[in-house]
Amino acid sequence: MIVRLLIAVVALLAALVPSPAVAAPGDNFAVDDPFSAERTGWWRDGRFGMFIHFGPYSHLEGEYTRPDGTVCRNAEWIKRQCNIPWPTYEQQARGFNPSQFDAAAIVRAAKEAGQRYLVITAKHHDGYAMWPTRQNRWSLRDHSAFDRNRDILAELAAESEKQGITFGLYYSIWDWHDPDAGSSTNFRRYRTRMFAQLTELVRSYDPALLWFDGDWRTTNPTNPWTRSDGEALEQHLRGLKRDLLVNNRITMRPGDASTRRVVDGDFGTPEQTIPAAPVDGQPWESCMTINGHWGYARYDTAWKSSITLTRNLIDIVSRRGNYLLNVGPDRFGRIPAPSVDRLRQRVSQAPDVSDDPPRAVPRSLPRPRERGSDADEAVEKSKAVNVSAARPTPPPRPATTITAPRTAELDLVLDKISQHGIESLTREERALLEEMSKRLRSSE
Image (cartoon, rainbow, N blue to C red; front, side, top):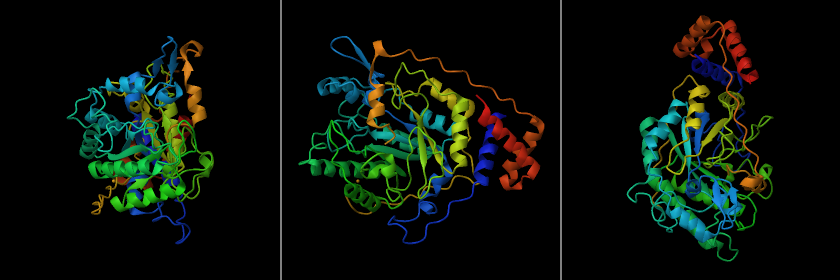
């Protein structure tokens, strides 16, 4: 009952929010208007997606034992924040064997939760390629214990298409492993390999979306990426696939997240937050975790309640945003059961905010040519802690059960929506759904 109610509530909220004004021609130098372009239609309709952070860091399960016996905790940033020597990190990566990665089960979990697209890390900041790249041997195929005949990105892309979920890839511009990536003199060589890797990804897996990260000034290693580099990359990608979507982290930002420009990419990316005020100039997507980390950390049991996830979804969709909710598979490739449980309990099918079926993703043939998510470093440093100094994680509060009043009447309303659309409701029927929306927002 709650699942069907939630579908209706989110649909009503989306219907009541006016569409943003279309920008006038010449207001910026974007390839088109992402608010109205056909190529962004599937993403604007999607509203709810699954983020997947997965890599050799998952093999450590969030903990690194130093030679002196002390333990440092982190997740996807564990190599850098726990100062793991490269030989040690590379050696543990050789044991990475996600043999139980089940693309069908992962896509099914997303679909059953009502998520219409997914984005998986093809390469995170540690530079490790989760596909058989031809640019180096720092990859799942060439530097792991995983079956060399398997390709998890290909498996996930194929299963996504089979089950009707749109497929996207995450790629970090900042690379800790490639020695040329932080070199002021040899950076162009890294840039060439980066462009080549992205060409491989677009041509091999045909993603509808590329989600970039690592667009900030930093050290250890430095990041020489510039705005002109980002603009050149975006032009390169448009040449490979005209209808490709990219986020706003594709170019270097000179300061904090507020210095990203509305003309960078197709949509903004607030992280671990929901904008309190209307977002001007660019569509947006809030990426958030289910617990306290993006990658898998076996000790992190601070799972957000299903009520919190539901409230986040309603808040975001009612403001015309998208919700990209993260899961972090364990070292075997399995999504933790508490993540799946929370998706099923309260968020199931909630993103069906349109009465129309999801529109098809444009599938452009490539032309005959050669292919941030994470919190800022200050936040990541605060996560790298010694176990002896860490406070125990409090158990999550149980989700509050919402009892829907006037059940029979609500059933009639929901049936009416499913048959005739949200616009067919009377004023009294809309008031009933608004009442339930308030109950969901106020529940703890």
